[in-house]
Structures are given as C-alpha cells and as structure tokens.
Amino acid sequence: MRKCSYTEIITHFRVFDVGGQRSERRKWIHCFDNVESIIFITAISEYDQVLFEDETTNRMIESMQLFSSICNSTWFLSTAMILFLNKKDLFMEKIKKVNITTAFPDYEGKQNDIHRKIFT
Image (cartoon, rainbow, N blue to C red):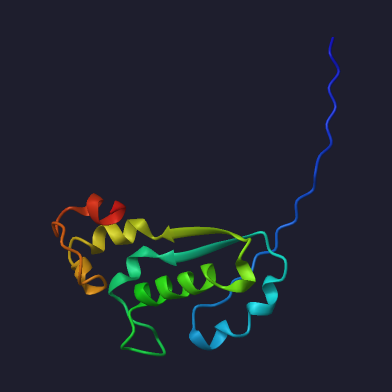
C-alpha cells in the first residue's frame, strides 16, 4: 500500500465585466491591480455592427483596437492575455449573407470560404 498526500492550493478568481461602452472604460483600469491574466471576450459575429454611442465605428474594429491597447499597456506588461472570440454560431450564419469585407476591406480571400475567414 502506498500513501499519498497532497496540499490543495486555493485559487481565487476575480471576474470583472467592464462593460462595452466607451464611457465605461476609464472607470475600470483601477480594478486590474496585480492581475495575472486577462480574458478578453468579444463577439466574432459583430463584424458588421456599429457601436451604440458612435454609429460610424465598427464594433469588431473597436474591439480589436481595445484589445491591442490593453495588450500594449504598461499596466499589463507581465499579464497573460487570452482572446476569446464567442458567438461563432451566429458568425457562421451571418457570414453567408454579410460580406467579411464590411469590417476588413483588405480581405482578399474567397467570400464563400467560411473556414478560411475564421482561421486566416
């Protein structure tokens, strides 16, 4: 018989939903003191939508710019970053009807090649 023992380490998670509107962003930077990782979640299906507060700005482009600014912030130099693109099911249906060049005009691939659009 072999006896094994282990010590269980308790891990604490703090989850913040920082809101999507621009006016909310400046309010949450102080919440990230000493964080080890950030999970950035954005809807891949919003590539053809605009912001509520600025109808000239594409949501996907805005999300990409925000993610880039967070990744390059001095606050998060040693912070692990995780990008999670959700709502793939909605994207898969929408991409059949709404061209990806709505958000990415430089895209030169086949317009009906759904998998290439996702993984390129």
